[in-house]
Image (cartoon, rainbow, N blue to C red; front, side, top):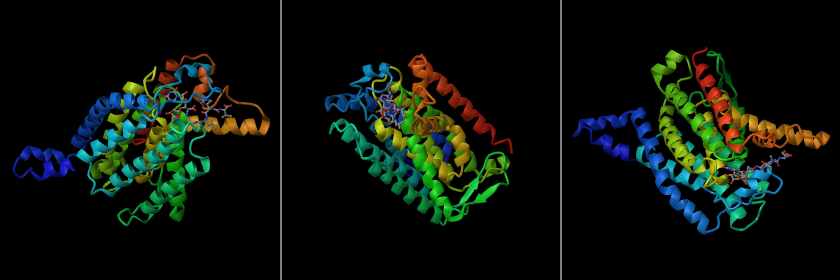
Length: 360
Ligand code: 57M
């Protein structure tokens, strides 16, 4: 909003012409979200403690986690406030993609909020019943998938692109809708599962958002997209500003969620972050590349699937505990060591995904 006002004034004050540049607004969005997070977080953490919105620690987890009891949770509210306020200032709400991704953040955040509220305030350890929690996610993802599929502006609405194969465009047709649901709900729950040790999930979200931002900017820029021979999607470049806001809020939240964490993001944060990253992947048609960027989230989820399947089929566990970050904790790695090593792996995957842009 603010950017439109400032940009409209540039005939009277020419330096305001700078507000038309996505790169400039992305930097401002990142700094705004970072400052808002750093200012708001202490107050919200204090408020969460005051209303006893604190984490219940399961007794079947790593013993080192028992000392975390009483840590305030639902800190994801901070992230959502920071991203939303930053986008109100620097985002272009005439851009339909910006609206869809922001609504995804708020919609998945609302589902997570209800789950956290039931667990922490109503002291119901099960939280929202899985059928309702998963069902709400499916419905929200279905609405997003249908909207994007029928979106008249997007000639590639049902097309799947892939890294390395520049000519490989696979039209899924109506099946793009269930595919979108799989990507969006999958990434929402992948971040949710990953958020099991201090700073791990938010650090990986920051890394993925940095890589996403570069991908989104390049594929939304006609000249760069043509040079790199990636799908050019007019209008998606504005999502770079969202990535800036998300990066700023993630770094700000990491300031407080870093080991030893003063606050957990809760499902309100993990579902919101995963849902919006998944929606971003679907909108920008970089689903496969972003599965590489978010490779640690994929590995964490696969570890749970394999562990549950093995346990149910054979009674044996593949890992000492799933998700896989707990396996390394039980192997004796300290929590900070697990976190930083997973971040390093995330950075390597992000760099590899960016390299695929040129390997075509
Ligand atoms: C999301 N939630 C954390 C916090 C955070 C099927 C099974 C794999 C499901 C899975 C599960 O329940 N996942 C839910 C993970 C929880 O964190 C809260 O949840 C929010 C994210 N959704 O924001 O509010 C705990 O994680 C720790 N934590 C930190 N620092 C952080 O910054 O230390 C979180 C954030 C917190 C805190 O201890 O209480 C969680 O792990 O529940 N279940 C599991 O992940 C469990 N694994 C399991 O059951 N494995 C079995 C199955 C697969 C057969 C096995 O391997 O045998 C583990 N999680 C926990 N205890 N806490 C083990 C049991």
